[in-house]
Image 1: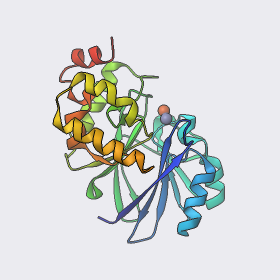
Image 2 (image 1 turned 180 degrees about the vertical axis):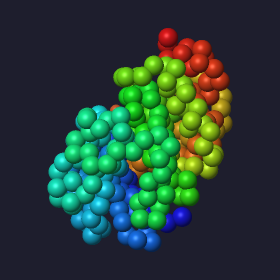
Image 3 (image 1 turned 90 degrees about the horizontal axis):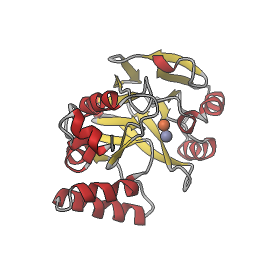
Length: 240
Ligand code: FE
Ligand code: ZN
């Protein structure tokens, strides 16, 4: 239980990406998850006097990897990403595959492959710290679009997420909560958990803060895509 997590907003007001600065407190080793944009990341790291040793990517899309090369050079950092993305993640040094264990200092991460948004997309899951970095697979109250995988792939991937403990906090790749609210409300107009979620969202966003992290337990009750019990039901939510 020694992972410190800082959220860094990138592409603010355009794509609202979140990069995350992780620090293993015992060893001081740190990493950036999905460096989207160089300036805000270097600014925050400098303020904290932090020099990330690693860049951890969830998938190859440019809004998650665009600053890989610059951050890598600036901090002499190593880029770690999905084996499947070996040829399409800029500057990749080390590839990891589904089920692998990877350590940031003494903090243990498990790699979970989740096809759907892309093929080879991975989640970075730190079980002892109850932290899950979901990239563009799971957002607050919504999910990532199907760019490369099928609905079947995505449904299987979401089931992997649903099987993780309810007290896991998840950290998405974008601030998209506001976009998920209308559909969630349409699907469950009278869910008190969802009402609380919306109130929390408004409070956070009004203060200019990220909505997350939210626990998987709450997300399972409020995200329509996680509530689908069958592929057919899931596909009907996708409008297929
Ligand atoms: Fe993406
Ligand atoms: Zn993205």
